[in-house]
Image 1 (cartoon, rainbow, N blue to C red):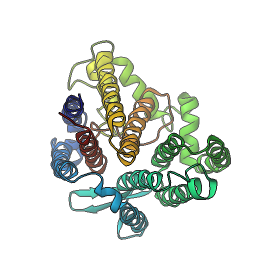
Image 2 (tube, rainbow, N blue to C red):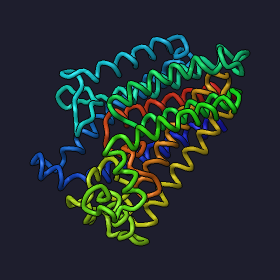
Image 3 (cartoon, rainbow, N blue to C red):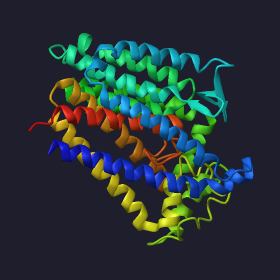
Length: 364
């Protein structure tokens, strides 16, 4: 049963990655030709990141995941240092006002993706170390929240509110399932609401995104443009789609068609059946992930698998929700499918760790 779970996880991930390769080329080739004179520009870079991801995935498979406990604090400190360094002019690369990447030639690295993994590993280790004190406010709740607070503060300075919301949700769910009292978490959420309000409505572009989400037609050529074009893409695909490669919205109408809004292009070219197929694949992935969690042989493996599945699930839900107009624009990629080096690499590393955890649950 456990071996079958591993095979299913790999199969579903490979299908999603293959769909991503096809759709990245389909959605980006014309834009890449116009901007770089090479229709394969993004595809070649994506394949390079895929190769790097395979190397790291192999490493995650051959090294016992329990070794990560030993280096959880080291990984966390490395993540925090990288998050601080990326904010420094000359080190971090700024794109559209956001400083989130290190860049060397064609290779880019987004430290917040590594920070997601490092925090999940640290919190999993903390839950194991403090199992007898996890219900206590001072010793069980405040320490991981302080770690989360420092991490999200550095990510907010980039700025990247979408990653902050996803990571915070994952950590709070992990702590709740571990036994942290619900009133502590609820109090923290209520106390965070004013700060969240300020973060959204005191920043012009975030306020514009929320207002565009509520009514994109108030500014159809400005803040509401992406949402409208995304919905046009999905709606015009109908049941069976326009056909692979025949999207009209990718012709400079829909920004970030190969990254944040690749699901919309799938809807336009492959139709309702294509989008439902993607959703079903992610549901199957989550189902297999739950089996890994259930069969984990130790508490660290249980919470590590839980955190990784929650992160992949939330990213998928938010990305699909944004494309459909259910959530405001967040800028989170669709796991395994969207173009994006760091996100693809760490999604694959997460897959490798999940298979590693599942393997320890194998038995004759």
